Image (cartoon, rainbow, N blue to C red; front, side, top):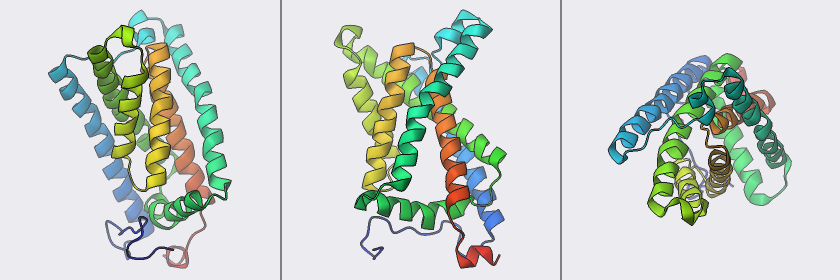
Length: 225
């Protein structure tokens, strides 16, 4: 199934003989730095196009209750994504079975020895950095370009396609990421509050990382380290 021309071939970025904990530390450090860098990209790009990357109705209100309400809404809005994630883990569709196999063999070993708190740090960095860039700057800029009267469809679709492209690992993962981007974009448009998609994104990533770490069986090489 995983031949030389297969979409799922993957090379361990730090070598197959590196101990699992060292591999996890490399993954955590790289992921947090990269996602944090995206926040600075959002600030720079936002400055260039005249869009503030931090758009939050609840934050601007100065009300703690409003901020907590936005966070709570984000938490509730995460539930459909978690249900979809669990369905994807157990579906028998050929393409998704291959994707799950790819994740188990090639991606999960990178963070198998990470702690729950370390995975939370990655998820928070991803939620803040990616949402500031894609929803805060790119979607907002595209909405300004097409005009408020044109509706949100085109900005959300274009931003979601770009979101899928930058998350491309396989064709299936591109589609899943694009659909998730659209879901996040709709919530951002509907609430006008970046806190909501940040919370959705962070909680979803955290749940997915912890679930994959816990549910994926260790291979013989990893177990022997």
